[in-house]
Length: 197
Ligand SMILES: Cc1cc2nc3c(=O)[nH]c(=O)nc-3n(C[C@H](O)[C@H](O)[C@H](O)COP(=O)(O)O)c2cc1C
Image (cartoon, rainbow, N blue to C red; front, side, top):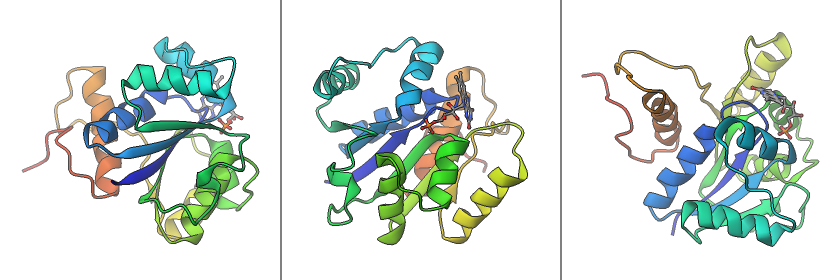
């Protein structure tokens, strides 16, 4: 069974992470999900979905119910003893979607202060696939330097910039374009957008 770590952080665009998880579940991929503390309220604000539970297991149950799948395991960003904190857990890679500038910075500097930064650090040290969907506008030089540093290490940087050559008609079409390109970055086949021929 393929296994990916997915992190949703407190940048705008939590819908990208949610759509990515739905697509991974369709492919029977196991997901270790870390949702940053800050992103819970942004997810609710932007999508109306409330995953906050009184305990981590209640949060996990809400997430599993939402996706109708037990293939999603949830870990709190504070849980530095979670399986994904160790390279001995074999995974196929990690997606940070959307990725805030704070988390981008933490990853670029190897800070590993929470489970998202640590799991990304582990993914990098083990030479596994790491894809970031960084969202901010405009980018300042610090953001761009952090992205350049990671791109040079082989990290896939997929900024959620819409394209128009696939003739999007709805917001869903635009979201699916970004999610399709995110799946492409890890070689996961998809037909989420119309490809140029
Ligand atoms: C509604 C809202 C939208 C935000 N959008 C972004 C964003 O697009 N990009 C970003 O870098 N930070 C954004 N922020 C700020 C981050 O949430 C903040 O920097 C936070 O510390 C990120 O923490 P995290 O990476 O641990 O989730 C937003 C905050 C709020 C409240």
